[in-house]
Image (cartoon, rainbow, N blue to C red; front, side, top):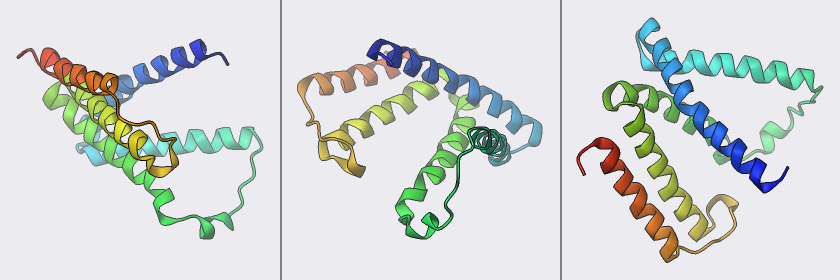
Length: 148
């Protein structure tokens, strides 16, 4: 896949998140609690992934569970926190501001992870252009909020 195609895929994936959050918000309203909305969303997602894995005829080596470090399992925990949190934020902040803040937090964490090589990502030191990008994201938050 070309770099251009990867960029397009990344944009599409990013565009799916607000739709997912809004639909999860509807689950929250229907079932009465953000945790239930998130849990049901994860349940459906898990079922789809299991069916897809079976369709690919992927094998599962359960003995690897014992050799996997505890930190490696935290992705699921963080995903649950993220999905539940965004479900709770959108009705209070609106989709634009909630996601602008979430993406700003992602950008800040990415710059730190790159700078220090955290969790095995390649080291890429903080630079002036990266700092300007962060400043622009913070400015975007104020502009989207309507109180610049």
